Image (tube, rainbow, N blue to C red; front, side, top):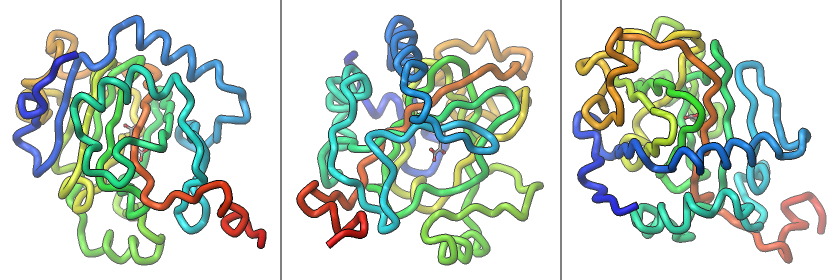
Length: 251
Ligand SMILES: O=C(O)CCC(=O)C(=O)O
């Protein structure tokens, strides 16, 4: 996949966001979904509004990753060669993603507005599989900044249910969304708990011109189906196994 990153920039968003509609092929999508669904059941964490796999493992309380490679199905073809070719992780401390969250949303499920916080290099690469979904982007306010202090780096303004997103990104199945820099640090992102994404137009969807297909959204809405995301990040603090015992509480 040869791709000029600048051509994929979502120009109406603050810096930086990029959207590539055809990032994985249909066969690769089927294969990746099969890998997700064949993971052992204990791999899933069931949350109230989605379920989640964490690869290679959850971070410790001090936001440290115990060094361990990602499984090969999360590496090839997504990180190698594709993300590598884009060069987006070149400046990250480990030069490549070392952590992946797999989120699965059934219709009606979503994720509260939040930020990913200081545990990670400020860049997320999200591969969408199975069905489209709209990601909402909110400018952080002073209440979020307070919440961030309390929650240790993950602002989520739960109180304000009427809060309107400032931007909306439509993520098609098989697409890649990259968010980084100010968009990572100064904004929250979330997914509405709805069975229908509505009000989809060139004016309301900031990556409208970059969509692979606009026809399915001409009516301005679509019915949600199960959508899975692979979110690739670089965890800043990594402990080698030799040093791991102290992170696990040993001596
Ligand atoms: O599924 C997505 O696209 C968003 C996931 C997300 O916000 C997260 O993992 O922090």
